[in-house]
Image (cartoon, rainbow, N blue to C red; front, side):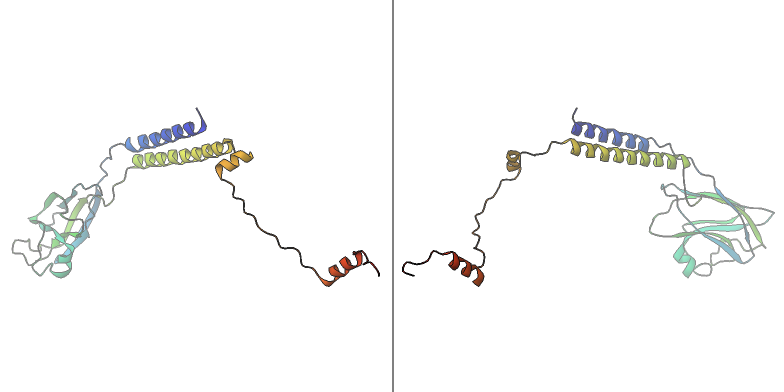
Length: 227
């Protein structure tokens, strides 16, 4: 096997190893829910931006009134409604659970170009079906965390990147060895075969002649007859 064939075989092996490491990633395990205890005063509300899972799955939420508080309302509304309409105006919730003490549901955002907000409502808002405030509210809130990560997947991705780096390093060494062992065109005939010669005749003018050069030539000239 010559150097070029060995180099190609090593490149194929390196790419195959990197592909195997990337495509053998284990399925991502569901991360634990993000848990909070939310205190909402009477006539107030709690709002939280929704960060949909990066893999496109549904965003899950569970809200349960504790310590004998409630009932309350839960809404998912466009963030634009939170700014311009909620709670006293005509806001349009995508999901509405009203006059409840225990709520659980999944939410899939209809568009990734819009932002949405979770609202735990303890106000007397503009909707006629909402729960009127009955005092301070305490809610045990669980929801999907904003980021999903898998340490095992990250470790395997790092291994694949390391394999690619080693493969590139060995490829560079193989190229250097191949170029060093490649025969050079040292003979004149081989050089002519690589790049033909071009010969151009150039007339070289005589060197300038000063007065001293003419005087020397006259002194060396033979004397004329009769002198």
